[in-house]
Image (cartoon, rainbow, N blue to C red; front, side):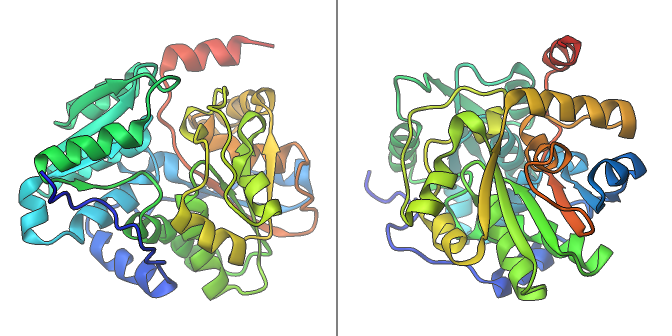
Length: 330
């Protein structure tokens, strides 16, 4: 079949207007997640920190915002033919849940080594799961083949304008809730959350500094921003399983290079210490990827003393056995 409705090869770069449209689409279904504060974090950094708790979002991560918006934007025929996605976990769960809520069938291509909790949740939401080897097979090729065979719509986890617009609603809420911030710090994997966040922050607070944070082992975004073009890297190895992309999406990079000030990295050890901080001090569970931005702030990678800082906690989907094992390490 050749009638796949996968993403167009021409770019349709979303704007803040699209973020506002997404907010209307998802308003009745997505949680308006809380903004958390910590006197300990403030004292440690010398700043006033506002943590946007997307680990408390439906399906456990910010991904629900973009997934629901992308499905809601489909026409009737596309809904009938279903959707396909590739994801290591959070987009898989989010799209499966969003599609189920809207009566749309979904197939998810997941790596064989995806966390069991994320695979179980994805299947639990009614998705068909197709596994692949992330080190020897190309997930995009597999997903496009399935989409073409079924005439389905491919909704990538980050390189999609409606996904980006949906993700931008988290920062829109954050700024509306806390007012002006001087610095916005956002986890970076493929770039959907950072790109959407940049759309909202630049529109509402033009002078705000925007910084993305990647795992040290997978700094493709940092290399790309500094080189001015998308850089591809080998599959990285990090406990931040939601940020193991090998390159930033084209739609995302078009926004990042225009609106993001810098991209920095943190180590796996810093992620573990940040997970421990949230568990012990703030009594919340944040997955390693969800800790990227906070780790950069709490460990001094980004100077923020005297500033009002918005930090996105992107998700909380972590296997409890793995969580316990990581926190048990010293």
